[in-house]
Image 1 (tube, each protein chain N blue to C red):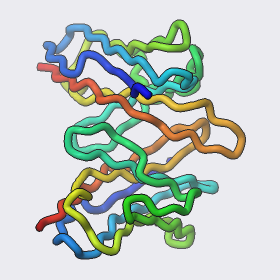
Image 2 (image 1 turned 180 degrees about the vertical axis):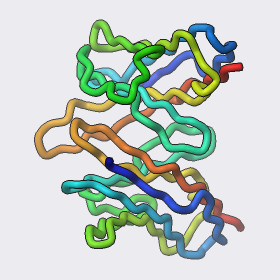
Image 3 (image 1 turned 90 degrees about the horizontal axis):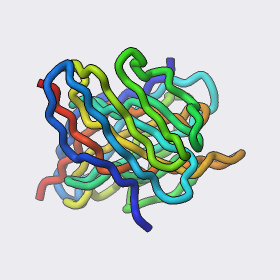
Length: 117
Length: 108
């Protein structure tokens, strides 16, 4: 089956500019995640969607980051305006909806490497 | 706050030697723990999960609630095991909290 798709793979912008990332999850996966991975650290969850509703966005810097999943499939993550500390790899993942007693494996995309100058 | 600690940034071993990647966690509940792996130029992927009690690619990991540890072990390292390994703790709603990762280098 096709995996999680992300674009672009690389992006270089200057601080205060805007940027958007796109993610297409595995077909049929109801849950979609955006992670931020700063160099030398593990991925950190920014936002989690269940279909087109937000489940958890407690670690999303809402003054500059936004995300949407309008039709419950594709998702976009936007940063406006970008700061130097936003330089990171942005990972999208998807999973089947978690059911009672089961653990949903998360499938990751290749990531978008963002450099803010 | 829930936390996952991987104390080693880099672990270097010779081919055929035993491997142990350390992971400690803090969690106020019954934990669900995973190991994810990222090979060079590949995506992050699930290696194993503690509830499955399975061995994948010769790796095993046992949950020790007394020591709050979930160390990843393999008796004989292979060169193809060289990768970045992340320990992760699952919270409510399928949210994963990752450790900082350990690079495993297997030398010939």
